[in-house]
Amino acid sequence: MTESAETYDLILRGAEVLTPNGRQACDVAVSGGRIAGLGDFGGARAAMTLDLEGLTVLPGVIDTQVHFREPGLEHKEDLESGTRAAALGGVVAVFEMPNTKPSTLDAAALEDKLARARGRAWTDHAFFMGSAAENAEALGELERLPGCCGVKIFMGSSTGSLLVEDDETLREVLRCGHRRVAVHCEDEDRLRERLELVRDGADVAMHPEWRDAETALRATRRLLRLSREVGRRVHVLHVTTAEEVTELARHRDIATCEVTPQPLTLAAPECYERLGTLAQMNPPIREARHRAGLWEGVNQGLFDVVGSDHAPHTLEEKGGDYPRTPSGMPGVQTLLPLLLDHHAAGRLTLERLVDLTSAGAQRLYGLVGKGRIAVGYDADFTIVDLKARREITGAWLASKSGWSPFEGMTVTGWPIFTILRGNIVMREDELQSTPIGEPLRFQDTLQPDV
Ligand code: DOR
Image 1 (cartoon, rainbow, N blue to C red):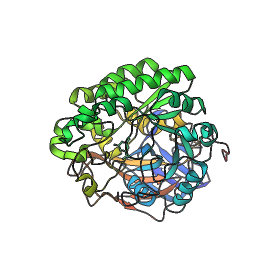
Image 2: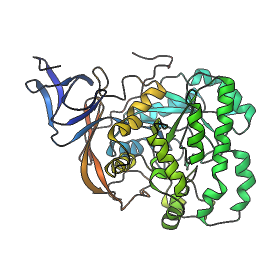
Image 3: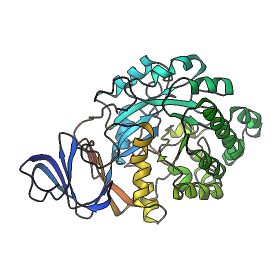
Image 4: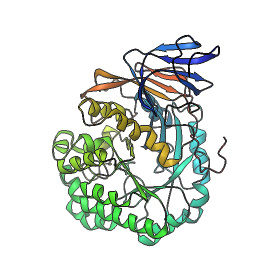
């Protein structure tokens, strides 16, 4: 598209843009919150023009796994602080997990979260429906409610009380509904058998021994077998073992999968020696051979998305004695800086980064109008400086938990603007205006509202 007499709301000028055609030097015009065109808009008029010489425009980053703790655990995080951290980190939309207090198990709990997010969320958002024996039959209806991104299954217990541990219940949950189901794969029986390794107190370096690679692999294999039997598509969350990478490659017709930045960046035993219980998460960070296996999964095109598994706990809670310390670490704000740093180090192409942080989410979950810089799509952009070298500091972090395992790390690559539906939400580490986040829309919801 070339210049026209039309006046646009916004024109992004002079940057390199990651479009469906590849990396292009072009302008992007925005009208009514949507992308009006890509091309040369040099002579066009606009209410606002951003001159972005030297910067790179990515599709708005979508984080498909965050725990924002509201309702019930707001001393760790809430929807305002969690989405604030997201926007500061270049994220335009989040999928939030159901292990809040109460757990998200019915329409009222989902509606409550949507109502709480109204006027307080800095990013667009959707919520997972938790699964349990008691709501299994209703899941087919529940997963299609507006604002719901799908169903989440915990096969192994982690933070909160959600658990679907036996094959019978798992089969039942998989039978009820059609959308892709997101699953935490750790085998609860094996976790129980091995708990004695740490039960009476142990060094946190034992975490990946207790919750070992076999614990994850066994659950993933069970899930794949049942999903094939039932004919239900699944999404394996936060893969941590080299063995699962090999296994999942054989099931691309029914299974997609996620990797998080933590096990791509850290490895045992070093992370436990340096960070102690701050490095404790489920499934655990493992030794370097698994990290190499995960990178192989990235490079082979296995992983579909990167989610942060943002799981904030306070420093006080994390400061207790292992294994009573909670598992999880904040990450929504550092997701993109870490990936940009891996890009700068030559481990990840920018095209692959884009697929993992936006296009993948759109493809997996049937997001409407998000995930690519294309005419007619929402004008969501994460504008980055690929060369900026910045330190991740406590002052920059917005999570209520107030810490990051990556504090003190200097990264190459930084988000400079977060633009949501044509509105500048973050500019140079400062939030702009007010929270304008809205519920995300999906192809499979009951009232698609399109
Ligand atoms: O480490 C984790 N923390 N893994 C999970 O599955 C849950 C999460 C949390 O909510 O704290």
